[in-house]
Image (cartoon, rainbow, N blue to C red; front, side, top):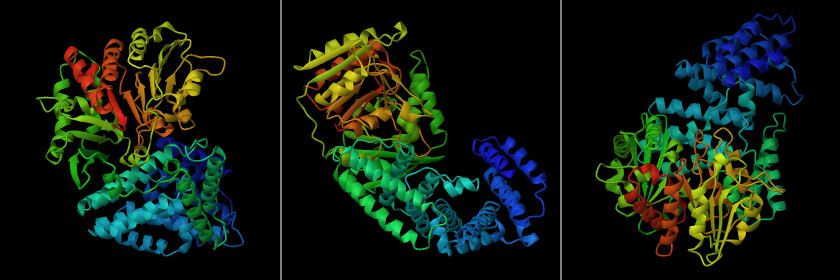
Length: 619
């Protein structure tokens, strides 16, 4: 009787409909559960879980206390095993809810004592999704007590627990109606490390936070292709990894099972990293030392990486020989970026210059004294992946006027790109203006664009209209060094793996190349150019790594991607692309794009026409 109501209440709570959830809980509270202690206990526990999910900590705590007042044993709850572990798990759950309620209502001394008692119970380690939350809250208590170094210890332990998991499913946490934000742990640790003057360590955890976000977003995908492993090897290793994780959630497991699973997990993780390091980075968090990233930077290059959560914004300025961290003002950052992008796409807007200067003042000016190179490698975070840095201005000139820019979704990607040796003489494969069955989607200048670009390559194959199919791309793509796709892009912010590019339909395919497809495709391209609408956009998740088409093409085997951040002007793009490929004969990709943008800027001064495109990957 209570089960469907419980599920309904939790569903409302987890989807933000707190009023409806509260109504269901109030109804559950009026139910007469009869004289059986176990059933009455179940009702009270459901109420405690539900009110915890709503953030009504006083009511949740009151529900728990009613158990104690009745003097009912927790072993009388349904489903208790002979080993007694489920009983212990329920006791841990009860103690966690009590500790959480004490913490959130400001009873710090009692909460600290309750969390210490929880951490003293070895069975807590079996409940990973609660274990990291307990460690996190204990770290927050340490911070509030002014002992940041102790907080660092707890936060690091919480992150170790989080990173043992691939799946985003919070079994125990969901069961009690509390889903913790894993990214908050990284945020607090970064904040404390920065406060303690440990910029290099903070930078490493920023990278791990971004890796965790990518793992979470790709957790449901199984059909990866790896460049150094067979499909069967990949499938077997992923199955083993998921099985270990599933076993770790088996609450009624024997006491010695945890150690065996841990050892097996270490073995599988090591094998996966050895067989395919890049694939391992997509299904588990793999640590990269800051010194390793520094060694991969170009000699005359500065890495400028951002990280923010709420109003906390940090910038890391990294070169081969130093790492410097700065805390910036992140208040209203998302609104400022949104306003700037909106103004950029209105060529008659009068406030583009002001918005550009404001963002320059927030993001660039405070770090300029640390940047002494002419090459900038930019790594954004969240909404900053949507920002055209090239169009930021100090009032006298744009960033692109003074620096050659390239981008990465995260700095750790460098380790997978540096060793690549893409084919350099495989010619150009260009797709232009595919026939999508609707004249409103025709891109006349895109068709002219690919024909003009092809003339700059001795070996070129151009496919337009009905010939520009997905089937042709997947079959011919691996044979070419340069891939140019002048077509429309589709962006789905709620299902990023379903974002993609639109090709013409044929008998083999509906013409849609999704981001998910790219993680199952192998290319060997030196450059992929996405001359399409919104191809640089991706899902801004709670923690980051925008999983856009650029990240997908990097994994598929491209060394570099040029893509747009908004729906671009057809004619201006055609001119820019022609300039870009002409420049490639004289300089590297990063500088070739910069020169093309400067050329187009002379003819079309408004940033809308030239600032949308950016280079991601190797220079």
